Length: 159
Image (cartoon, rainbow, N blue to C red):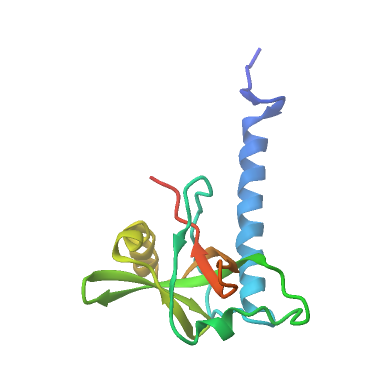
């Protein structure tokens, strides 16, 4: 009799197949959202999606002066939610004090991460560069104590 490994009553191959299909659906959903209406992005090619680690604190984005108007939700301006998760593009750039990760919404730069926070994204950015793909990450758009929009990018999983 052949023994087939199981995970809570399901075969491992079924579980892996499910995981693969969920990952492909997530990438497809990201691509659709990035090409939809509103303050999103249009991509010419499939992005490398950052696998986020939600157990770690998100990295704060140091916002550019004009980022506030770009962060304002456009789908329901009458009563924008106080919190939402959005997709952003990430790119590496040189700064005065080292390499930084820049955060974009479409062609518009929203801000940067500190050098320390940027270090978490270097491996993902290098992998994307070698594949000639943009990097899409998940971010939290919420309001700070003063009521202004703030942005925080989920950090990648540790490898």
